[in-house]
Image (cartoon, rainbow, N blue to C red):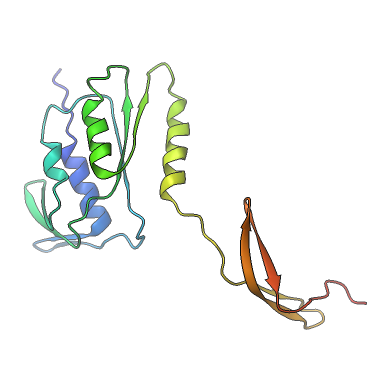
Length: 171
């Protein structure tokens, strides 16, 4: 059995998916989210392709035998996860993460539940928490309403100051 591990193809395809691209009549729209990142999971050292090619800042990338023009030469942060214990095999993943500003994680095969924790940690870094800028409160029974004039984060919730009082019960 000849097993191939290739980081170049998934890294290149991820760039096209995130930043959009055109190749002839093929058009892929860029991700609308400005917060972009790649998670690369592998159990081995690459033995096919040249992952360094996928990380060159360029508006043209090659994938599946075609040249693609992308809307950005930027490289998103790549968070890499090595499923194994051999530090040598994970060395290239660590280099990819370091070069792109991502992070490297190693999960031994006897701790598969760690993958969930690692993915949650990565998503916590990548996904920005929303912060409401306006809140409108209305009591449809008595017609009173109020709009927030300020907000502040408080743990997992937000505190808002309203511009007027709104009675919740008649009286």
